[in-house]
Image 1 (spheres, helix red, strand yellow):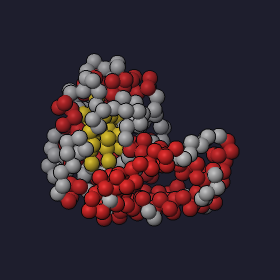
Image 2 (cartoon, rainbow, N blue to C red):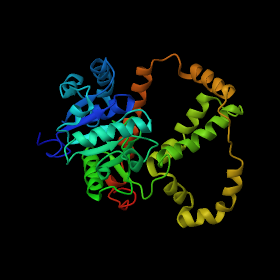
Image 3 (cartoon, rainbow, N blue to C red):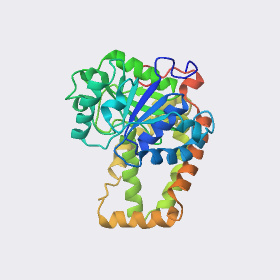
Length: 327
């Protein structure tokens, strides 16, 4: 497997859990030429993964892949200790249950090779807590993807007090080899970064729909027709820097910065009660409830793939994002 984009050292990846995130990782790893060992408690795990590959194969990096060829790289092992034996990478995707993940990583750490990268896809938990029962917690990092992980480039790398710097370097190199954009956070915060940004927008979106300002469908259209495309191209700070004209971000703050805090006070803080949820669900059903998950996911994946390819990255443009942003 000398032609693998992640190099010759990494040959086998163990994927623990095959929900939506685990499936995306499995497809991406297989497309990179790795042997992918699936560990799942699902009795139908093999059929479940193969069916997902039929959907995901069309939107993998480098163009459509052959689902049968991807599936040929799969192995299935229901025992977690046996699943990680000989693995070079372990990507854990179990439910967000701290006790469950602590137990998993205690067993993974005891059974996986000393050189293996031990990575968690958690969106809420921190490495020090996850590795509390491990003999060597310095091997464990959070590597949080943005869904779907086989398409969206971002991987947030979160370290702990005892994290081995070499593990960080090797993890960053691994994801870069897969064409991902690994970003090492300077400091761990609950929710990390991308989900905090997403949560802020979602809160105001719920507020605007709840107050009858727009419908669910109209809100989606507004985002995809404005800030979605803008931020995919340049990100919020660079967008506002350009909004300041030749004077840049400094000029923008001088003219508009004084009103920011006042405008923030007018933002919504909606209750997520039965009435609010019922209103949103009814409008969502009207907007896209007549289509299957597979249809909606295929459309999303095709569009996201085109957007990402068109926008490129700072690295593509030859700019230096700096060690804090793109390690």
